[in-house]
Length: 298
Image 1 (cartoon, helix red, strand yellow):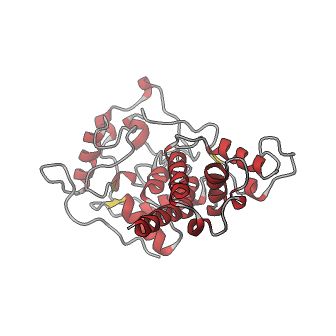
Image 2: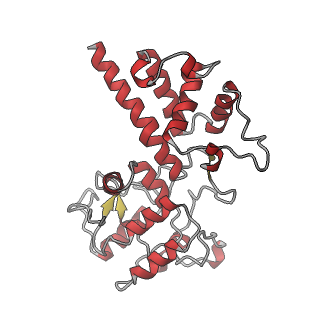
Image 3: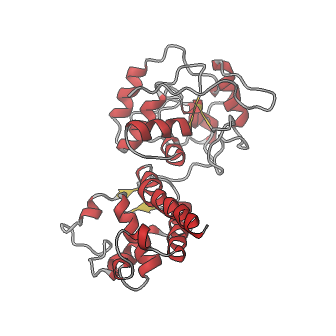
């Protein structure tokens, strides 16, 4: 029984550092204000140095591969810290700096102008201008984007009324044009990939965060539903690039807890209305009917 328990912990640890954390980093998930690394071995170094090594590199405490040689207590500690990073309860930059210090490496905060390390080159930053948009308005969500890859929320006196904004998606949107808009933007490759997938979903159909992440994991690289959600969030090309057609796996609207477009968000009714106008059916409990769209191509 103890062996089975340890095997479960090993699987959880491998998933967290190999797939989950890298996916969040590539999606620029808001759990961290800055993602200094995005590679699996970098996450393993940071987490294990801080949870297993503590005052020395983890390689001086356990043999490699760590997942096989860590005790159950060490595995639980590594898992707990990885989950805190994913949830924003632990600062990844500070943990990275501590790890580098233990290894006698130059701090990324004080690195010379031309002395970037490999990990620094792979750094994924959240732009300084990016802010949480939990209070984003109806009109700013549905208005077409400008040439910029990001949009600014207009003053309330300039905004269109919610009823006027809802239902403005066109039947004959040229998705090839939308794909070009996405590819010409300065967004990350992962966000471009996710938004391009949205252009495959036809009017009157819906898909899910899980369906998109499953497709990517099979055809491209391992990811997770949360990373997909982070990449879709603040879509500057809505409604032509239809992020409103993505729902939760249980058939509800889904969305971030702090956002306005989730099941309990203040714009939930508008999202339901838009989807219904496009032909998506909901049952009496407001859960979507029919299977999700999954034909995203290769």
